[in-house]
Amino acid sequence: MAGWLGALATVALVTSTAACSGGGSSDDDADRPEPPTSRSSTTTSSPGATSSSRPATTTSAPAKQDGWWRPTKGLSWQWQLDGEPIDVSVDAEVFDVDLFETPAATIRTLHDRGRKVICYLSAGSWEPYRPDAGDFPASVKGGAVEGWPDERWLDIRQVDVLRPLMAKRFDLCKRKGFDAIEPDWLDNHTQDTGFAITGADQLRYNRMLADLAHERGLAIGLKNDLDQAADLADLYDFAVVEQCAEFDECDMLRPFLDRNKPVFHAEYNLETSEFCATSKRLGLSSIRKKLELDAWRQTC
Image (cartoon, rainbow, N blue to C red; front, top):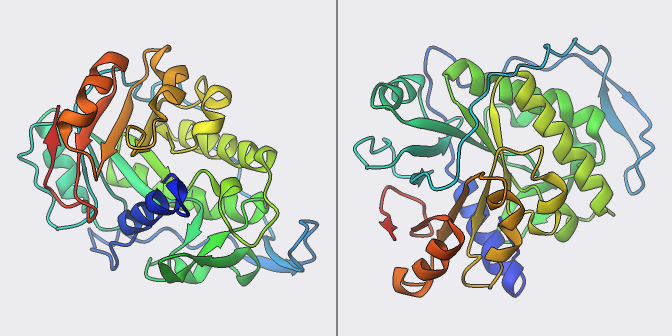
């Protein structure tokens, strides 16, 4: 979610707020990823880290599928990461809900109502309350996420460590029946993570995540990584952005809109009268939300 100190400060706090719907609900034991492959400690070549736990074995990636959902610009959406249960009565074509908190039965209900469902998870931070938190080695955990001192930034340079962990989460999205994935924190290179993460590191990681999603027949959205939108708009199927109207950044999502791909947009501090004209001009899918991301929403 977009930044914390100044413009970054406000948005990232929001993102972490969104990420922090703790606990997990079970749906036939489907809310826990399969255990990751066994790891052996080796020395990492990533600068700023002294060691890492790397998978001792790797599994063959599934063949990439062509049949994933390809959403188009202008779809209406709802974003609910808190306030369980999900309010399935909301009049929106797309729902964005938490991977671990949302049971598969809710996803089936939404599908029965003709909705598409996006799987929210964090791909750039470690959250101690997630059921797979113990699978992340200490070597990939960096500085605390400001505002959430128990959470840690991930060293996304260590792709060989994080890839199997993210693959397990994506597999869980697939098993629960989601249509797409919203991986949060895809802009670690702009955050104070404690690691020397570059824009090139970020692109490599983000492209890896897109490949993981598409291999599983799932669409994937770019979250808040505005400065790399042009580089990733061909690969990612949609974008999710917060407060781009408040910080005058919505035009940076034109690479998606020009490709007829939706930009799912949320504002917190502005009235709809302050951003809906811009949203309609650009073709954004815009809503106003409360910071806690419960079921409440206003539309343009």
